Length: 224
Ligand code: C5P
Image (cartoon, rainbow, N blue to C red; front, side):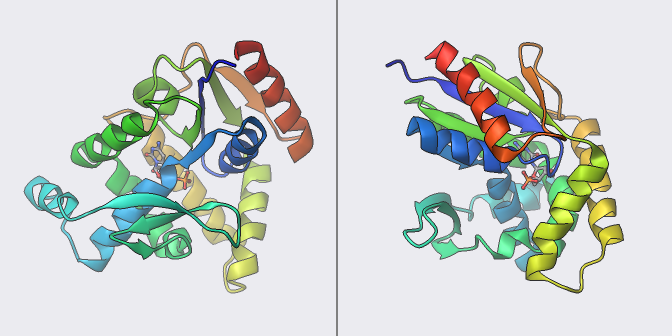
């Protein structure tokens, strides 16, 4: 069977990562959450108090960042490692969410992450989710999916997810963060969030996880 590259892009909290992970499991492909990489870089910049608007400082700091995904036998998923430290939980923190879009808008950061993502796709057999995967990282991917969902549904889903870990979080905070990230991600100069021309739109507002998976699997199998 032919191995392909599958990209999933879309706004924040559309359920891209969940679908990408399920697809990868079904197809026995590698799953890469590209957002985790941008979050880990942001965590490093915050911890080291990097003035990232200063390009020289940002580039110097990136030289000290090493990212990799490692399998976690307990969850069965891959965790994000930053300089050999498991930061999977830390990168989901609100402080990281509040700064990640600004950090991701930097040219040096994008070049750093995109080069590694392209390397990961060399052997194909990969499902990667993010914002610019179908447009910039793998413009020749065999299957591109652009995931959307009603904004209210997205806020609700994200709130439930975050509330389980932090009962102090408010729905307003979550809504503001999603709106801010979507705005910055869509309006930045370098690889803004866009639907690739040849991407299929998947609106999952009224779909169960099983329904969206079976649709995506059908599209994937048509290409394999
Ligand atoms: O996917 P997730 O919501 O975790 O991504 C966090 C942030 O990382 C996004 O809001 C966006 O700013 C950035 N990102 C990006 N390009 C990608 C993936 C994520 O700019 N391919």
